[in-house]
Image (cartoon, rainbow, N blue to C red; front, side):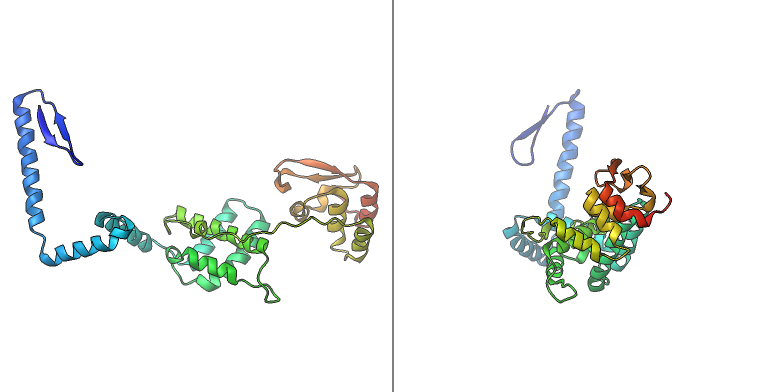
Length: 274
């Protein structure tokens, strides 16, 4: 049995089958300790001063010199393998297309990320901080030069978060900066419901292109996202049913919605063969 000092205090016991094995192991450990001691003596005065200064700088953060060196190496590797945002955005959009995401979602991502790209296109993805992203989101204005509504700003937040998750998976950044950038606070408000008179006026003023959208939405109760994906082939006036296919439904399940007489009257002039 050989008893050796254990790192962090205490003793570590190791057992051997023969005395010869124990002596060989003990001699090897003595040589290792001697070499480590010799190496420590080879440190120059400037290196010793630099080490002490580094420890002083790291002390408030509770980090060691080794941890700082590891962080530097990891970040250097990320920057070496990084991509400009100008390259990351097209790659992300291409991935959305390859994954079969809806055309509506792809278009929305492209529009919002193009705006972000104008400000950060020439920057490396890994160098864009959460503070910069947060400031950029708060600086967004609408066409009337007013700050964006909270829901609209949060839509930008979601698209940017998807982009940075895509980049993180490819090793272009170590973390998603959006996780440290808060969404805008959405103030709750009462949901307004149109009166029959208001809804009738809306239908009367709607253009020929927009009228089916409002009529089906109002009389059949389809969600706006489902209405935008609806085709005339899904409107079966002969059987008085609107088919909401699984791929077009928010709940990803197929269902049929009845066409009531009022809706059928408004859609009568749009009688296309399905």
